[in-house]
Picture (cartoon, each protein chain N blue to C red):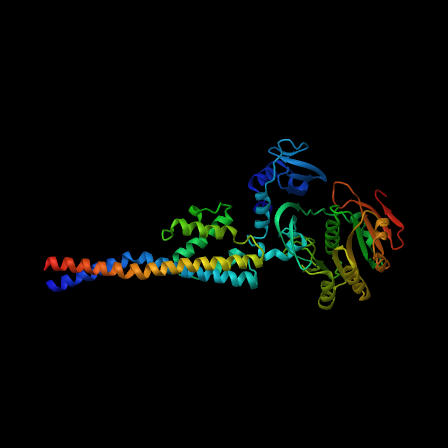
Length: 303
Length: 163
């Protein structure tokens, strides 16, 4: 899919001179060097591939940035305005394009974004078996646990949950899994990413409506969702838990300590039985530790 | 027999006159069909918000020039080609440079705006197109009968000389 949206020259360098599987992010900022997050490290993109120095790096132009968004919208920006208002677009392969530019407001609401000045293309990776070290902590003889995955952005939360549901499927654990995929990142646009054979995917819905509709319609045993953020999300989780449905969700935080400081988190803290903290390293999906419902560490990396 | 041949000459010259006026009729039909395409774009962008390429390709018309423009436009998008008068109006001979420039500017901005602004732009473009249509209609009213009359007069002249 990236071949269809990236500038021809950039794509040629990336596909010929860079190990594509190690690219996490591609960042283009107007009149600034193109930055590639390669194996978790920020590098610049030059004629000969990834380089440490910004000298002779490829400079992103406004045209390049606008072209990426135009092509990502399949030449129809008007059709993706709702996504743009949220600040991102999602491609078929689950690649997420974050955009920055001038926000046009009307009656205190975002009307659209114009005058694009930078894009951040996040490339999803399948890290197979990344959840295996802690699988037994999350699914024991009593069954599935309510699990919250914690890490700062870009550390592989989505990769982890995608692998976990895939592992359930590989083990033929015939739980009905419902993925509430708000941004189309977990299963990809058109469900093109590997999420196993027991998964139903409700895409591009907010959590409140997704949980409500999904529980009524699909009779799920486990609901998987990404990035709990505000009170509405917490209410949706609470609702699902009260309906007897298990939850696997992710949240932005550096540690369990930081998580506990989050406003209104106490509303749902009694729901989760396991907290998986991901490590801040270059690779996505590396586990630092697992905590139980009382925030006691029950698994540490390497043990 | 002689009168029959002379009548034939008059008819043929009249037909040639009609053929020469085809340019003006084609322009008229072209702008009418383009207006219908803009109408469809307005509706689809406003309500269904389907992708541009699919709206274009679903547009049904028998007008060869409009079909060519749609094909050229979609090809340019898909092949990452720059949209210029040469690429967009390839094999189209019924437009003058001013019309090509204005239509090209429109196609260049197509799909690059949010719904409201895209509709506003389409409405403005429809007004411009209306002007083109009115001018083409005026030209057609003026030149189509003129060419036909000239053809017939030329035929009659030949017939009189041959008589």
